[in-house]
Amino acid sequence: MRMKSLQLHKLACIALTVTMVGCTDLKEQVIDEVLGSNNSNPENALAAAYGQMGDATFVDHANVFGLQEYSTDEAMLPTRGSDWGDGGVYRAIHEFTWGPDNSLVTNTWNNLNAGITKSLTAISTINSKPDFTNKKLFLAEARALLAFYTYHTLDLYGQAPYRDPYNTNAQLEVRKAATAIDDLIKEMETILPDLANLKEQSTHNGRFTKQAAYGLLADMYMNRAVFKDRYATGGFNFKEAAVDNNGTDMDKVIYYTTQIINNSQFHLETNYFKNFDIDNNGAPELVFVVSQDINNLRSSDNDFAYMPVERNQKPSPANRGTNAVCTTPEFYQTWDGNHEDPRFARHYQYSDGTWFMNDGSDTSVPATSLVANSASLPWFHFNRGFQVGQQYGPKLSGTGFEMTANRIKVSKLFCEKNTTLAMDFTPELNFDNPAQSVFSQAQINRGVRIFKYEFDPEKDNSTSNVDIPLIRLGGMYCLRAEAYFRNGQTDLALADINKLRTTRTREALYNNVPGVALTALTEQTLYNEIAYEMYWEMQRRKQSIRFGKFEAALAGSAKPVSQPFRRIYPIPQSTMDATKIFQQNDKY
Image (cartoon, rainbow, N blue to C red; front, side):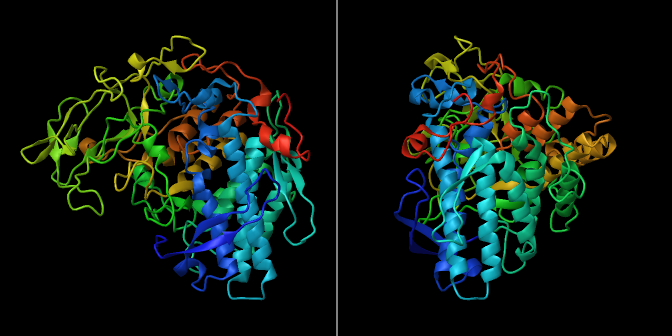
């Protein structure tokens, strides 16, 4: 059930330090049918901790997404003419020139720290109340959220703040990744019995369930070796004994992912892109999500769809994209020979059978598809996946689309900020200065765009009904395949990769044919296959570090050869100036 029943309350929050969230009146949502209807403090505190996930942290392109994706071959945000300069803060992540004063580094740190703060507040609030019906469950969820926010902070920054929520006089501590990873694993394994199974006790995939915990534990164990030896130059020890000495790290990854893969509540979608549709609420691959709704009570975010779309690509007459994010030539080239993979691209078919081909052959599409909650706004559906070459679509005529015979006219598109420049998305970037990802106004069409998430045209450019997957069944197959491969069980790894490839099917335009199975699996092939499944999902940086690819130059997209210290980001300068408790990371 999507979280529709909402009421507002004021949350008086506390700060761990002046560098975290300040005390303010934050409006949070309380979910009557999920968290109870009496608006008591435990519900409020837990709602606030959950709310932080969708308050920019995991839904805004310049937070976790930016740090996990812009630093890799999957995504970049170049300066395009007069747009997206912003002091070079976006380019710096891809060009590996970021420092402690970079706003993406600072904002992400602050938002993750706010999640830690709110989780600690929830634990303290719930624990201090007399017994009530959901106390054990709420406390387990609050502890799980604390581990979740802490894990992502340790992953990106190597350090995270902590204060014992059971002791009002506790001092602020700093957790370090190398030792804290084991503590987080122990904590998650301890609270597992108190978490609900998905759909039990009124839970849904926007709540932290046992299945969400399995997914988080699998990711923790997969990256444990990196946390323990962040700057290793000879590879990581993925075969270390597990925290409980029962098997190795990879054995644990296999165990926890299998708990999800074998759960009958989950199954792989044949249409890969349904996982990222506007109506993906409760989709059978989504284990744990940021639950989003367009409403007037709380903001939601459309960034992952909005950022790659050109300004003259309009899903409705009242909406547009922003001409920003693209992929790199290097990542696009990994798909050579795989353009028929159902995850690469998918055409949209209207209810009357019309396919939008986006190849110059379209003249019109039906105007019968309407924007939700609108009696008159037609909805133009762009295709999904990788968009390359000349683009086509509707043009405006006054306040509406150009029409022909009561249908939406389809035309060759030109860039909004350069109206004589055809909207031709080129795989090659060809920056004038190869070391700087800067385009002139005459070059703003460059870069293949990724339309993985469906663009929600209902309200404006920043809101969406799309739930953002944080733990997904497809990702569990990828983690298990990687663990099998690192265990030397290549045949089992190949079977999991082929399960993903052959379950996905192309659209009816291509007779719903499935993807083609591989006959062999190398380390490079596995690395590519994980990206085919998980691109644009805030995972690439971790993957590239594990596979030893993170330091490599990307000659076609301005990333130089980098050093191991760049595997984590610096503690923001504002934090270093405000407190002496943190020690700056190496070489920052």
